[in-house]
Amino acid sequence: MAERQRPIEQDPKVRCKNFEAVEENFTEEQAQTEASRCLNCKNPRCVTGCPVNINIPAFIQEVKNNELKKAGDIIRKSSMLPSVCGRVCPQEKQCEGKCVLGIKSQPVAVGALERYVGDNTKAEETKIIENGKKVAIVGSGCAGITAAADLRKAGFKVTVFEALHEFGGVLRYGIPPFRLPRIVLDRELDALKAMGVEFIKNVVVGKSITLNQLKDDGYAAVFICSGAGLPKMLGIKGENLNGVYSANEFLTRVNLMHANEKDTPTPLKIGRKVAVIGGGNVAMDAARTALRVGFEEVYIVYRRSEAELPARLEEIRHAKEEGVIFKLLHSPYEILGDTEVEGMKLEVMELGEPDESGRRRPVSTGEIVTIDFDSVIVALGTGPNPIIQKSAESENLDLETDKKGYIIINAESGETSIENIYAGGDVAPVGTSTAINAMGAGKRAAKAIIEKLK
Image 1 (tube, helix red, strand yellow):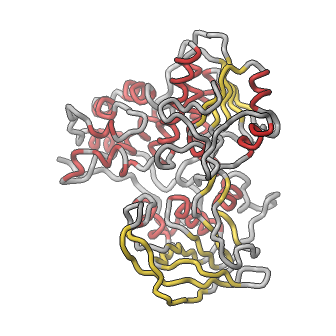
Image 2: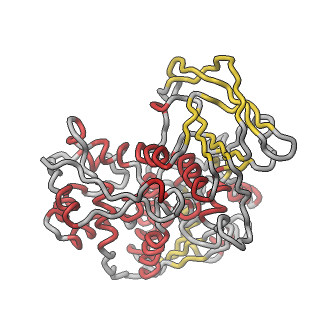
Image 3: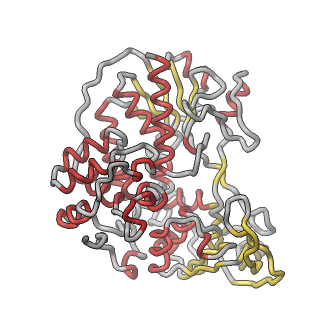
């Protein structure tokens, strides 16, 4: 059997200075060689590992036959975002993680094959039979655009409301273009617009318009997928100093507002040495972006060892190749400085017994070290923005939330405590926070809405 194919990558010394895509697509020969590795299992575990249940063996078989249109049609029955998912989904923990080949060898490169198909095919034109009913979607990220596609195919007039001035949600403001080129994202959104999905930007639902007003405007159902944009901070001395950013702010400034470019209305102070706190994909994105905007030394500060890093292995490898320094088993203790960041005290950690996550718990050794930094980026995750929840309360709507502010939903349908109001994605999480899980939430909500309103 052939070895697993690898996309050609930019040289790390070159790519760490630009925002161009790190990887090229498979060539036709690579795609067919990789497709030939698939065992076409009778009980394909890879499909069970995919939150939207793409028929993976079937589309791979069509790639092997060089029938890309058929492959694209198979994927798009389950996912309207093959070019996106092929680039940003954690395949090693999902479809590829279930691949039988991975037991003794390297799993089939499902993600790279999906991206290849997505980039080389277009969605079929869908004949829409209008049903005369309207659905509002709050947020244009993964969950929103997935639900929009399914609802539009079912004949609903769909309007997507976006709070920001560009569409795509976290795919645009959170994921850097070297991982997800903007031309790819725009192409996927254009396909939805061609289907008749209406997109309206600069509308903050809960401020610009309320849930009751949407109902009064004739929307039979509302799907809330506004994401989780409230950053979690460290809670230590010095985190209010100039030069401390949340990863959300840092990435949004660069990805959406072009803060790294000249004459930008939202400039970014570029220092020499930055610490990125955290070990997930967002931390890797922030660290690799910091290199590209001009920081000379970039550190990942993480309180556990490398084995516990939650980021994708590919992201970690790329970060290391590009020169990111990993300061493992260190935890932030205090950020130093008068008005500007001048350094950070770090607590040296060791690993103890496993915690509720199954990972070994970091325990302080009592040792403190001090390192000079002039910037700090905090990438410890985000919580739900409370705007819609507070607006619902002021309207006397009983929108139930948990103690952290996440909207409580029926896990099967996505319906909230208010009839015909649904929620999904990071504002009402079920499972881990990934693009494909958000898409799964969008599909579940769309299916429930269709069944409820038909």
